[in-house]
Length: 580
Image: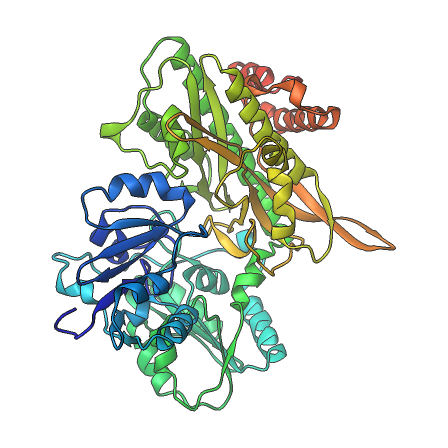
């Protein structure tokens, strides 16, 4: 910083594609701070440093930042200053704040520049300062890039590119620069393994009316696949050449970019005469609406996942009942082993959360073998896990009882369940956004003075990122409406610090319910197939309609899974799905 003549440095904690999960090379947040959560950013001055993260990681960040000299800032709380406000309070006028332009979005850059300029602070592009201090930094990822067959996707890459071009015409643009890795993987019907848990590959893309260019590590693409792509009208260029290609571009037509998903270096590489049109990435909202083939495949994936989870639960209770010592880490290993037995399994969709009692209050608890708690006595195991199959991606949370529950645990569990049911059962007019629906999952908790700090629902990719936009269900405003074919999670919870956490999560698809004189009405169909632990339910808190929903759901789970299970597991599942 001193050599660059800057008084502060901002670390966005991302990669050049602004991904949520990162290749090892771009684990800058963890390297500089020791904080391993998937969300957060840092600001460093000559005498101070701070890290912002949200409520999912307040407890984790508090522990991991102890002794680092980095203060933890609770993002999204009204009393917490944002990073620009904090830096302005620390810096004298005419200071300079450095950024790595490859890891800061264009939209964030514009906001920071506007605020800083009002206080005579300058934001400047310094490049990646971490290279100066990070010994043996991991290399750029270069895993295999492979094709994803149309029998899974339900649509060819040529058809997808044609749809993108049609959308571009409607937006008055001639080309889009695509930077988000899941958008690129979806567009070209390709997958990779450059990021753990996300089947994507490092790349950029340009879709124009007359051309389609993929910038990637061409050595990672087989000769057969190269020919296939070229036959589909796709030109292959090396990953790093995207910047020089943009600089040499003749600005004949407007360029469409997503400012939240495009880094500053991409923008600064465009000719100054180039007109920019901003909006949500076209592949982002196209891929959110799954087609009939994808939804049909996802249903099959849920059966595979349900079988693996049933085998796991049987193993778990059998060992607990025999008095064997099982740790949180053992749970993650065994669950992955059961999933590996399923056809089309390609890996876990994220690092599983296996959190017993007090660890359950850490929303995204990351267990390690050496510090895993033993699951003994009475308590609650919060298990949040998922898998990638060639036929779809899963994400499920269940809170499982070990021993006997307390009355408060049963009350908390039932209030969370009421929220899950309310969102599952809702019917709403077309055009409704997720922020309008979020209250349904919280109403029962709010009535008792309870709440949770995370969102209620996120989009789920199709053998892609487990977190997908542009829609979501949370309290914060999001203008993207619910649309048929969108696949989302439904995951209310409650967390009592140093005691336990409870979360129940299903995956659901948005469907049309009816069309009346008042317009089209939509709702959700639950896709996840696995029992909810009824031993935790306090029935006096439930209505007859809610009890009916639980019994109907469990009957569906039994009917879909039981024919595929051996006799012993079938009897176990029958017990777990019996009517309450």
